[in-house]
Length: 141
Image (cartoon, rainbow, N blue to C red; front, top):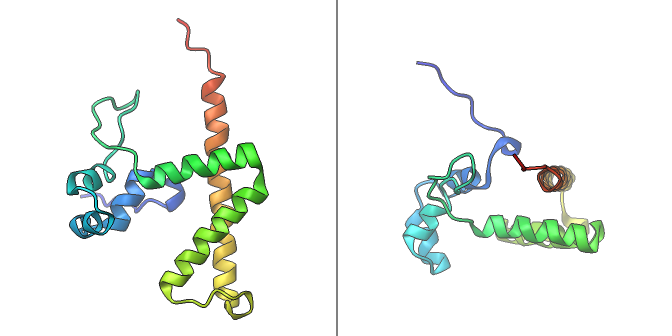
């Protein structure tokens, strides 16, 4: 039996990230968000596409955040994107119990936050490039 290596975050689709993040707590997450269990389950499955038309997933809030960030970056620029990303990061820090004053953030947390921001920026750029490539693809037969 061959073991498959775990996917890196940069290799994961949103539904895979949701599945990893939610794990076996689908009912609890659904209750907290006031959504049905089936909706939260669909967020953890692949969304139908040309490659997999039978997939039964559904776009999740994370997909919508990605769309928002992409639109913000394209229409308003990098500073606007960074403002929203930094706000989300600070909210996550508050949830984790970190103080969110600039001086009280540890160097390790600041370094990790910058790495996360750079990874997100890279992912947005990749998705934007892919979207443009798809838009410019001639699909005539």
